[in-house]
Image (cartoon, rainbow, N blue to C red; front, side, top):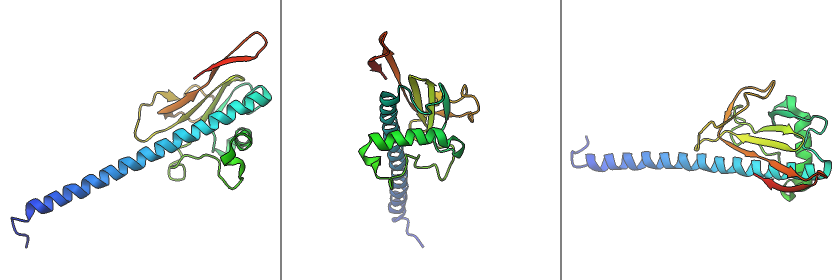
Length: 171
């Protein structure tokens, strides 16, 4: 039997363990969110690289396109993004390094990176976050894509002069 003088000690230990588990879970979520943001940055850099070579973003044969990058139905678009990523980014030149995938994609298919080529010269990338939820972005206007809300995004908007030369990028 537990002595009444040990109850405060046991209660303190339970609170300490519970708080520690909560903080570890929060740290894990924040780490996955940071990974997501770095992945989108890598993909963004590769898209700029692709456009500097081809004059447009992948998929090259379409003026607009949108979808989830790891959906097998979107393999053509992903192939274009991946080829640019492997050519542009030193880390990904090694074919053994996998294409950026959301850390929870194998557990929950709603965690996938969404790519929207809005025009030959603009794109957006979206991700679902775990800690900084805001649902400010969505795929509702993307024809044929599952409707989903996202918490983080990168948008490219580039201005060109009359000769189609990029004069600056505003993100």
